[in-house]
Amino acid sequence: MLHTSKGRKLAIPALISDGAQLSQIFNYNANPVTFRTIDGALMVNATQMAKPFQKTVYAWLRLPSSKAYISAVIQSKNTQSVPQLLRNGRRNQLNKRELRQSNLVITRKGGRNGGGTYFHEDIAIEFARWLSPAFAVWCNDRIKELFKQSVAQPQPQAITLDDVLSRLREATDLLTALKREREERERLEAILSGIKSQIDTAQVARLPISTPTLF
Image (tube, rainbow, N blue to C red; front, side):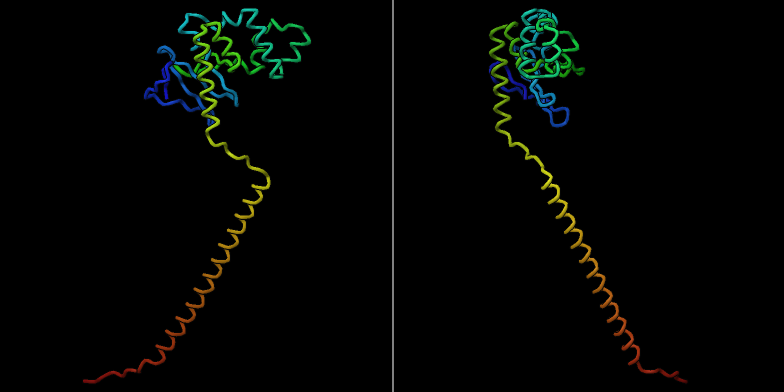
């Protein structure tokens, strides 16, 4: 469902892609902004975020303050990029490879509403503050809204090894019961066939012998 910045819903369905991963479009001042889960994390389309303000993602990523913030987020998430960053002492000098390794900044190819650069929600809020304080509040509200929706939805229960073994035993028992039922049905059919054969033989034995009639 597409939403306006004031919360009014429009008759456009939310996108669903990547299997169980969801994508939802909100509308800010007639500009769509896609929020989607990627590998279990909530990401926001930064390319779409920047468009209404005539700014670019690249311009923000070049700022020393942005690099410092992203490095701090990377360190807090304990991603694979952290050890290298700390060894080199380059907390304010992130490169593209390190951004890709962090999985906090992702570039996706796609259609009009699906492609672009995506920021992890923690980075997206900081980027939104740079674009506009009011827009940052709006993004924060949308993230909280999506979080409430995810909490309200029933979570699928994890399947354990015991569950698999139990279901396997149930399937085996069912197959065994079906086999016994088939064997019993075949036994009864054989008995009925024998009885029918005996009845037919007895009926033939009792038939009168006819003799030809001469005229």
